[in-house]
Length: 107
Image (cartoon, rainbow, N blue to C red; front, side, top):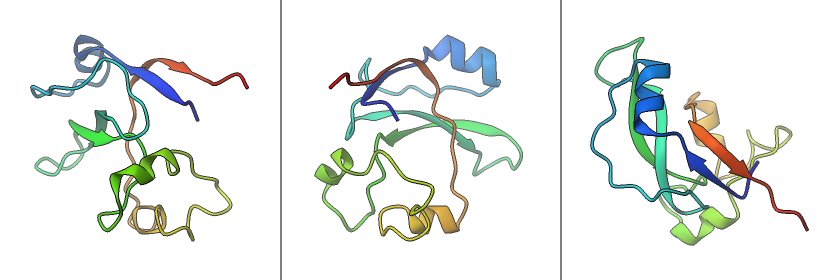
């Protein structure tokens, strides 16, 4: 997964996914711990997508938000067992992350 990314523009999301985009005050670039737009199954209309803001990095409700720097990548071998991911994985809470650009560190 990338270290940071540029979320797709509002117009691109609305056109590509036919999903309404609420007024969200989000930064132009997303880093672990930042809020960014996601597309998820609508809570109001089953079968449709909705745009919501979510934190880049899986942070359980019981954890400090600083944990996002360590939980923005999941491994398929351990996603079902790690405390940060297992509950969402078990409940099939998936989303689409609309990204225009992503950046990989070059160490």
